[in-house]
Image 1 (tube, rainbow, N blue to C red):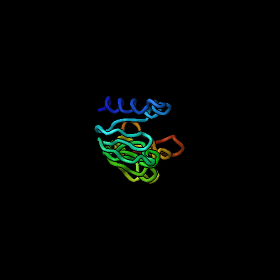
Image 2 (image 1 turned 90 degrees about the vertical axis):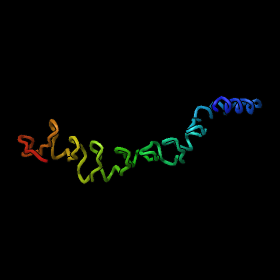
Image 3 (image 1 turned 135 degrees about the vertical axis):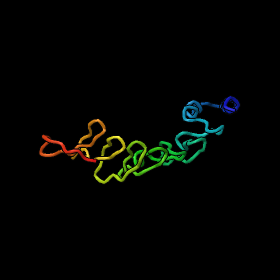
Length: 128
């Protein structure tokens, strides 16, 4: 299929091929269908309009600047956090300690355990 399509492009290109090489650079195939990568995105062998989508998650396109992908599920980066494949509300939590989210400005993770900072980093209290 790809070879036949290239031969058609070459045949049409006899008059002048200025844009052909540029077009070829942005052309890909998705499940046997050709598409322009600046217009569409291929997720799980299906074509979608690109818009702001630059990645795939769970077979669907998403904008990785605004949404994350966690075990095939999309989530809003500003509202949720993904820790070891589990989506949790973000609140003030910005880091993961294993599967548990925590606020790194108030606690630390050591060997899979969360310790809350106490009295200017001189003592830690275990937190779960």
